[in-house]
Length: 233
Image: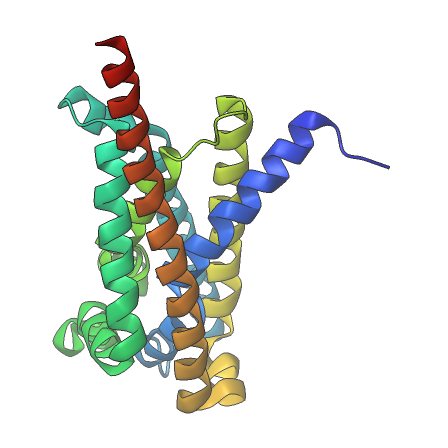
């Protein structure tokens, strides 16, 4: 039994967006640092914080997906230029994550712990947006991926179906963040530092391929436009 065209389009766009978002956010790797930031805290407080961080992260991703391309278009930036720039940003970030995962971990740890102030904050909810949602969970790289995804609607797919699928992927990603952060201590105990770095490298490899694909689509778009203009002339 085949899916209805609309559901099939949404599923296809979800399958495009979710691996990209999962790879750049890397919740399994981030759980190591989240566990440090919430060490010694009450269990219910940690679960509530994880939920709020996930909701804030979802809001940032949805704004980037739905309005990022429009804002850049307002400044005269073309879709193809956005794809090339986004692809370069994503690929370069993935390359750094692939070759130097320790550097990426140190940067995220500095963002989350804020020199130790996060751990000593009386009310952890004060950190649910900054720094734990942004830039720790959803930083410039994640925003770049979300905007690049929003500009990558396949030629034969209705825009509404694509955006619903990508938004569903962002929602799924937020649920994953909430669950993994809520059980961060168990994730760390299960995977360990070595395991999380292996997962991080695999995610970085996937992200690198996605970044190259986005870059290639932008270059292809420029070439198609150039050929059309040459034929018209």
